[in-house]
Length: 212
Image 1 (cartoon, one colour):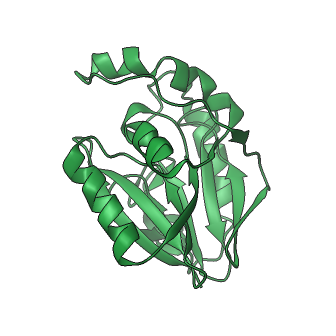
Image 2 (image 1 turned 90 degrees about the horizontal axis):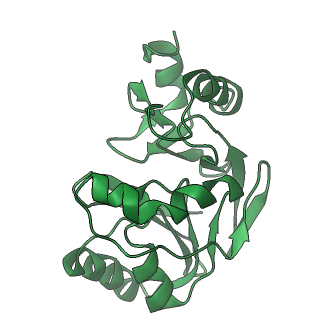
Image 3 (image 1 turned 60 degrees about the horizontal axis):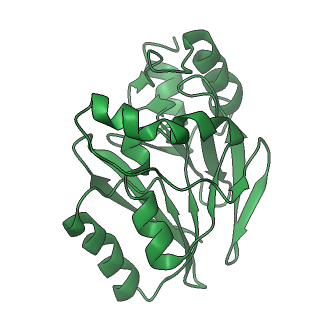
């Protein structure tokens, strides 16, 4: 069974996740650490729980979700996975960061790409990959069936949906992604977004004002 640990990092209050199972292998999702203090928080958690990081995976590559990618890449020598359509966001990350007053070095280029319906395996666990564009062209969601959870990045939030006014965003595409890839999951599935509190697919189906 997968254990989910979440951390809130950087000025954007971004959710970074570490998923681990009984083998102690773990994956780091959307590393958003922007300071040495936040870096220590991740490192201490990994050390205290005797975890073995095996991959860094991003739901998408907006600045707030990649601030810690270089840190993780260097410290743990991990392969970096995301969708191929996120490459332009990575390439222009420093200039996008400057718009928000953030100085950052160029992030790493992915080692491998993920696509819709891929199955990512770590330890004894499997994560199903869904391509859910609209917030960004290559946005991904990560679904674990036994654990009844999905990590939605900035596609679906508790009571809201992702913004579509950034480069590559499209409102209708986003709604189609949510309805066709996420709202079809079991109602009890817990959704962990890239910002804010978790929710369930059933709750969003019934009450999300953008989906009613």
